[in-house]
Image (cartoon, rainbow, N blue to C red):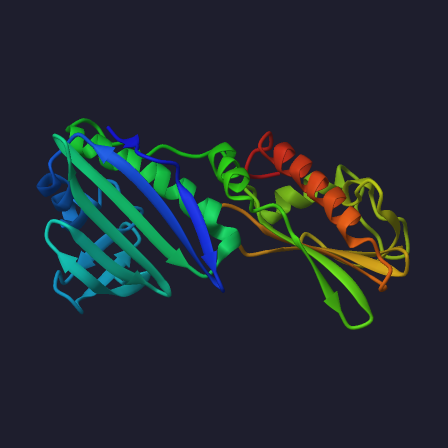
Length: 288
């Protein structure tokens, strides 16, 4: 079994974010090290099958189960048995450190990456994997479990990933919210429409609006991933659903307006609207 020694955390510097997760394990460092580095044991709790040349500078490959060609690869950057195992995974960096802790071990994972809005997906995935690692070390059956989205969205709240930003743009101001959602674009679109599809030239359906934002007519629509419509004063709102981390669609919402546009009030309204959308999605199956 695993127990958290301190809350999982996320720090961001420039365009790189670092997720830190600590777990206390009632097993000696040597046992934990074997579960981290032996491909056969890794395959029972890690999200991919792993092949690794366990030397500094060695190649590490991440294979989908049953596939011979690696889906991604990296390089072993740190190796100090049984204390430190670090490697790259594409553009990401993972560092696993193991230290004695009483009659057990303290395992620390630091995952560094460039996609800050994806942090909740990474955290919820590793949360489940670390639970499976504890089951493996305990000698029982290993069941990684699945997240229906609630764990993911709890990390969104913990890390403050739903806040958005306001920025100056030529001729005015713009707010921007980017959030990883837990259902595919088709399900998100269906939820937003609630039976009323947006049509260019007609008022935008209520599901795409927010309180205190004076919505007008649809100007462009490309279901199930894009709609833009006019708003007062002299601005526009766009909803865009694109590729995310694999948990679901990535939402990017923007609203632009002139210099006097109260972007802060509008941002708060959109934050509340997207929180309600996220809660709705938890009640929806993965397919419409």
